[in-house]
Length: 399
Ligand SMILES: Cc1ncc(COP(=O)(O)O)c(C=O)c1O
Image 1 (cartoon, rainbow, N blue to C red):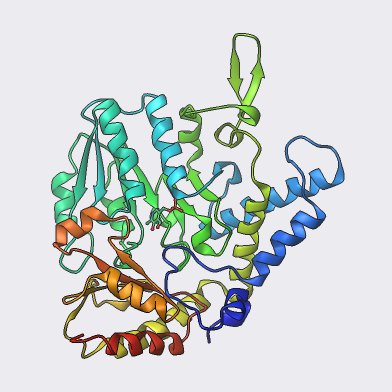
Image 2 (image 1 turned 90 degrees about the horizontal axis):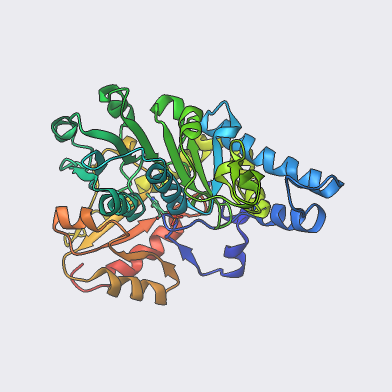
């Protein structure tokens, strides 16, 4: 059963069909009220004050990291760094690699062709700045990682593999354990979990990665908080790309030392309100029955969407037809229409979708598609929403 009633946006916009959750998710009252309660009762700076509300804020910040550790199966909360979003997280990581001279010219970084630009551009910047090589692993016709291609490209020069866990275009879940099984000890394994954390259980020990990041607003927290997890040894090894305020230990007129983990990677005043919103979002997931409930709702809706899609001959679906390997994101390629035009027609009917190339241009180039209409659902959607969508699509000429 849908959890729409928990999300006030639908009470205030009764005709809204929100099919753009891959871009960002709506917020339940539990998160909204939690933020309000924090600002009204406990708001303060952290790491500095002795007074009660400063201590309460400190506790909430700590609790927020504890729940992230619990959900990602991390044993050390000091390995968790809060950033502003996924893009900021990966940039903090890559720029710290550069500052620490971890990579040199001709070292290779392997990505997949489905990556979001957030996991491409920071590496291309290192290519410009240091002269590293960036190479892309293809995917198969089933939209899965092409392991044969991986084996071919994974040579001695590869120092880092950075892959998404789930594609934001196709919804395909990559079997990352396969990568871990094939990789050498001396290669760092970075995982973009921006699209997996909202939908499924993610266990860093099971994936066996060294670095993982995701963004809070895609999992019902407020926008403005991202999570970057690094193994402690690596964190100790690297110098943050920038440092000030709380990230600093001792300062004299001509020298400074960095503070300890994780603070050296969290410069300045942390946004405790965002951390509280993240805490509340994960508490909400706990309260509804963890990912079992999310998967149950998604499976039911996925089944129904596919049923309704049958018979539309001019629509191609970018996906693998293996339901167990995917989350609730559908990219539809219309042979007769540009996705922008359909998104506009849908918007007039109160249906929010995403058009164009979804910040994954290399994937579209590889498959030769000009653009797609991305329909992405979450726990507040219903079969009625799907019906409304297909009513509009059925009325398009030649669809
Ligand atoms: C797979 C993936 N990685 C990274 C990002 C970037 O997230 P943010 O804009 O919150 O930094 C997105 C956003 O759509 C994404 O889908």
